Image (tube, rainbow, N blue to C red; front, top):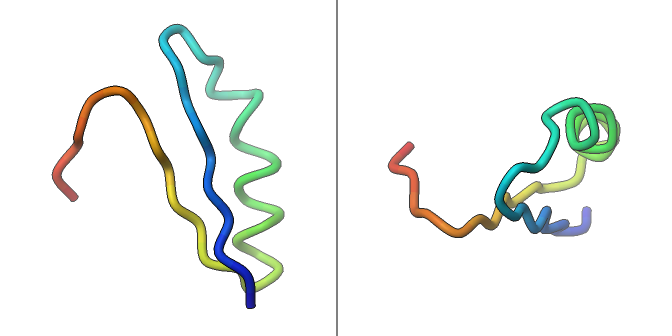
Length: 41
């Protein structure tokens, strides 16, 4: 299992990130989203 980071900037398109994110997560890898603002989850 790998840990993969997605770096998101202002005005990114959800559709551009959704399919790669789902494919990587579906393959069993850990995903981390990094953006400008912290979001509590």
